[in-house]
Length: 284
Image 1: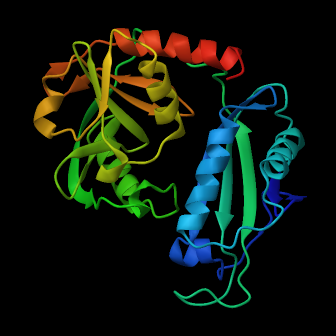
Image 2: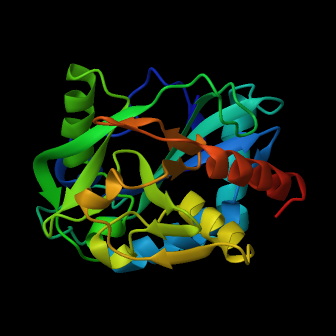
């Protein structure tokens, strides 16, 4: 079942037309949520990121788009798909409706839809036997700027990069901006560990303003033995690192085990994953 503007309909039915602006122009935003036993992980952070993104996109935010309203609609969708007592991956999509060309029509109104499916990992983990090889994706670059950090429907670089990764037997690729700095993975933010220093690219470089990125930075800020900075990462730094890992809300912290001829450990990734799970259990 799909939730379309508050109505539950069968997923086989068409719930928008070819005039939908998200389909025609990518005039849409989305949040990918992890929900376990009816609890939305980091819902407040997701909600405020969505609202900020809608303002940047100059969308007219409906008066009923409160945090409580959207949470209730998400949980309604979860229940309709019999996922209330298990783990689920949810996508909340917001678009500007129909009408207009590049300029939205006068009758265009913001709409939302919610889809949910099963996800079998309730908590986050780092598996010792897991291999995760990456390389740079250099066919296309991302321009730094405010729009690059939005979770919108314009994901051509991620699509092309994912095809490249599959063709080259890679689990993921690292994306560059137009200044040739490494900014993120195809599906999450990047962290680099060298000794007691941890770096992650700044938002100004064009990386996604990730919800899991925020959680990890908050955990790291409480460790007096580590120095964390948001700074640009050059490709030359990757092979000098002790650890590299990618973060997103669905998978948590994913250690990179190999980049070209360099292999990496995952000690900090494991420690951070334990602290992340503890934070979730405490309801933070």
